[in-house]
Length: 242
Ligand SMILES: NC(=O)c1ccc[n+]([C@@H]2O[C@H](COP(=O)([O-])OP(=O)(O)OC[C@H]3O[C@@H](n4cnc5c(N)ncnc54)[C@H](OP(=O)(O)O)[C@@H]3O)[C@@H](O)[C@H]2O)c1
Image (tube, rainbow, N blue to C red; front, top):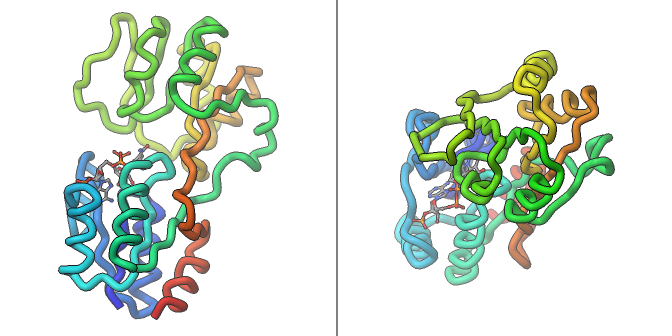
């Protein structure tokens, strides 16, 4: 009953506690790219070495089930987990927190499939853009010149001339987001469909100020992989596998 929990998210921390309480042995794994990930309670830090490395690890560590609770946009590890579990025959579940498709304003936003499309849409609109898309995606927006980029942890990566970077980690409040959008004179907000309450205040603030929102949709869950969005459903799935 050894569960590999692919983490790096607040969701994974909550799942780890719930799985342990339900009697499972949990190995929580993080990529270790940020200070927060390195300092957490995870029991394994760093990559596995692609699909083959992960498959080798699953066999050697006698893992009986894998729960992928990585960030909704961590597409590479999610794809690797699907392939490695298919290779080894180990059951896999994708935990994805509810997204913002059901947000009351979702029909007013401009939905795009990836960051490239978001950059094109933002360029067309003109005016100052607030990017809240994560540090690793900023390069896709390099043609934009009037940008404020907010990231949870800045690691010194170069940005185009004229960009202003704000380092700030949620949770964010409506008052704080209104203040930022007004002070920075933002004309367009770009967001990923990450979901979750701690970072959703920006969407309410954008509505209050009548600002357009460009929303990058999530990469799809790999074919054949079951998906849940609640801790209770994830525990029930694990119990079913053992
Ligand atoms: N993408 C985001 O917006 C975002 C936001 C918040 C937190 N995070 C967290 O930060 C981590 C990295 O995100 P990413 O978007 O760079 O991932 P990614 O592109 O999907 O994965 C890149 C590589 O990082 C390693 N990796 C990723 N997650 C891992 C985990 N939980 N345990 C061990 N190795 C892992 C794997 O290396 P190997 O191929 O060597 O195994 C993977 O191939 C993820 O764990 C994710 O949950 C991501």
